Amino acid sequence: MIAPLPRTVVRLRLTITLPYQVGNPGGDFIFYLLAALTDQQTVVTESLDLGGREPRIDVDPLTANRLLRVHANPGPFTLAYQATIDLHQVWHDPTRLAEVHARDLPPAVLPYLYPSRYCPSDRLQALANTEFGNLPQGYGRVLAIRDWVRRKVRFVMNTSNSYTGAIETLTDGVGVCRDFAHLMIALCRAVNIPARFTTGIDYGADPALGPTDFHAYVEVFLGDRWWIFDPSGTAIPMGFVRLACGRDAADAAFATIFGPVQSFRPVLTIKTALSPEGLLVEPRHRDEALSTAIV
Image (cartoon, rainbow, N blue to C red; front, side, top):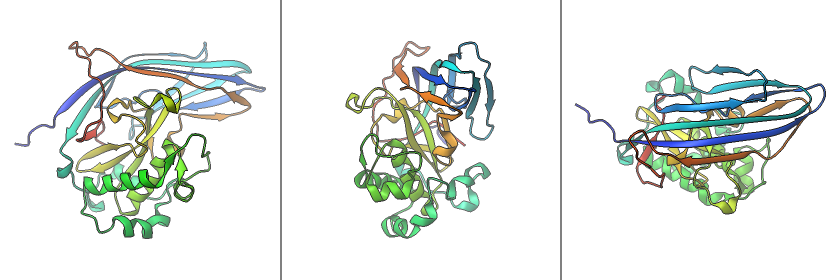
């Protein structure tokens, strides 16, 4: 009999406030900022205030992303979301996590082997094979890719835009969390390791980087599930509430806006809370492999 993997339950409370000013004739919004509903992430309580506007919420059966669509007439518009989340985290010995051949991957994982808009892995194959092709396969090789990205790229605020992809990040040597994630994903795919872009909130980030904000990190498929990697190294993975995942930022942007809309700085908070057992589990950096998703 295979022993069950060690688990930890972390309860977190988050708030997200997004203020906008909508011009004529109004605007449409697509949000990926509701906490995802998965077997390993439970939404205990939540509330959504759209100032009386009617939302439309759909759930992607493959990713568990919740898509929120809203129309706002001209004038001020503020979205306010609050939630209490239980993260059912799985831990594993990294040395026992193997890469999976493409022929054996679940169908839902296959799209994360291919190039995408911000992760042109086909253009990085020569580099990836030179740097990582001869390394032993498994979690250690993925960790080597993560650490290589950290060495090559400096975290500098306001150094990229919606056009910046993995190639530009590699060339410029600077970026923010989404840029680190895109480069790591592209390099993983270039050596046939499925990798995807995932969004959350930057729990535990250094206050010197600014107020709490949205965060992008990477999940890599090894063994029988997705494992978390944070190439920017700016936050604590144990505190990542899953909002959305996809091939890259084009699939999982927290807000996409159509129409004449002025955006203001979002206001986010995230903190730990007592679990039903009365325990306060404070996220911290750990050496074990961490997963909060199977497929």
